[in-house]
Length: 284
Image (cartoon, rainbow, N blue to C red; front, side, top):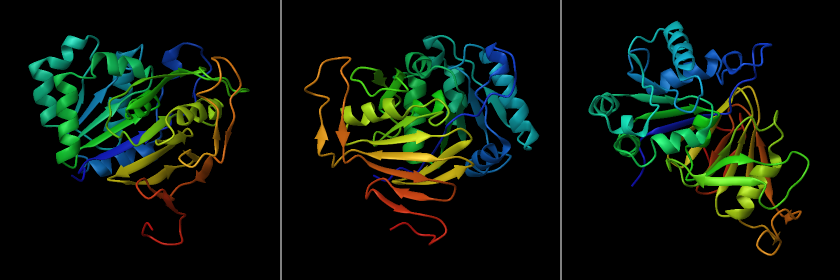
């Protein structure tokens, strides 16, 4: 069955302040991408739920998103501040989600999302709405990474490609065909996404730069924002030594098919084919 919903994973945004405290380094996104979230959700009258569960300062992050969406003209906004797993089965939250047009996950720690929401009644409602309705699930940084089934939970070494450096866990499984990483360019995450696809070679790896995202509809996506999207396809890798080496040893991976995409470029997840803008408006 074809999925009717829309996923919008976003790579995060560069820090805006000079302070070290997290409140000055909110994982936030610029108006251009946020405007697209509103558009895909049905416009300024859409019911949008903000879930700051990934963040260690959820109250501040929730207020930040309320201000940003309000600036764009949205009026039907709700913050679902889930701090305990039991809240994901709360009848009031479930009813609110049933009526929503969009849910927006903040940045922070993606494992907080899966621990407090994954496998709950709230998760089930989101999954069903995403499958059966034009429901938008958006997320920045951790909120983007949690969308996959095989989810990167942390780790990685900028200068090395070693077995075991990348930690994996179970995500929200909205799109099992992809593994998503964020802040990909600025934080040097080539190695950790490469290990992820070496471990799961049938899954496409997506590295999102900051202020960059995807509009995923069905089995196709379009790149939005100002930065790069790196696509790793290890399905036809000719040499992948991950299974035969010890933890901590250097890995090698040959014939890793790699694409660098920019705003307007499109990718067919099923066919693994690319259409580079502006050659045509249709995917091959």
